[in-house]
Length: 79
Image (cartoon, rainbow, N blue to C red):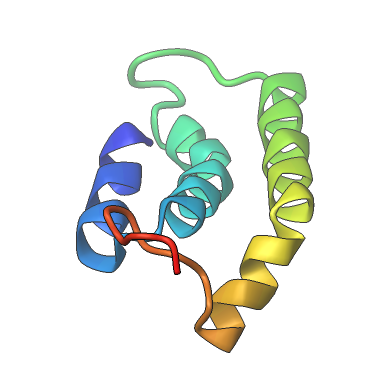
């Protein structure tokens, strides 16, 4: 999940986009480890998915700014 955050941040320089991508993929990555590194319980996967949805909901203004092209990038000075 941290690696997906870093990759999206590196290429886009949008922290909010990287946060949302990492959060949305967290339950998916957790399921990939099921049976290999741990046993994924349905309640844990559901909790991760709910947290991801809440994070995206909290970032709805950032999403609007991303779509409008007005979201500030990492390292960009404020206007």
